[in-house]
Length: 140
Image 1 (tube, rainbow, N blue to C red):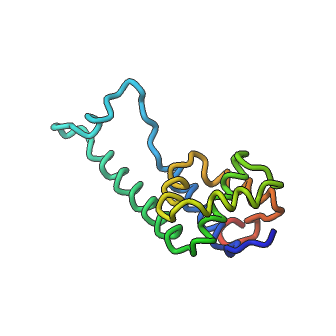
Image 2: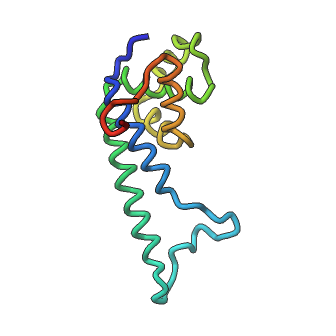
């Protein structure tokens, strides 16, 4: 398979996805999510707000990069993530790409951003087709 999306672009998405995954704070299942940032003292609770702002910046940059892709490139990116995740096999590429193409761009972006381990899935999807980010840009 020949990529529709430049490998450098896919590698940049992987880098940003990794940054996004690294910044997601662990959620305590016993903690009330609605009250996490509701502190009235000087305990440093504002640090959570700062982290959330940084999270939003990385996610917004990743969303903007995905939004800049042409529709067929976005479909390819989603299909690669599905192959890397094991939803589709390499031999089912045409089916994966067709199903990804059925998504409107906003839904495809949302699915990618909501995908746990997006960076790993994209790397595995690329590897399934003998592509690698080794030696590309910041991944040296």
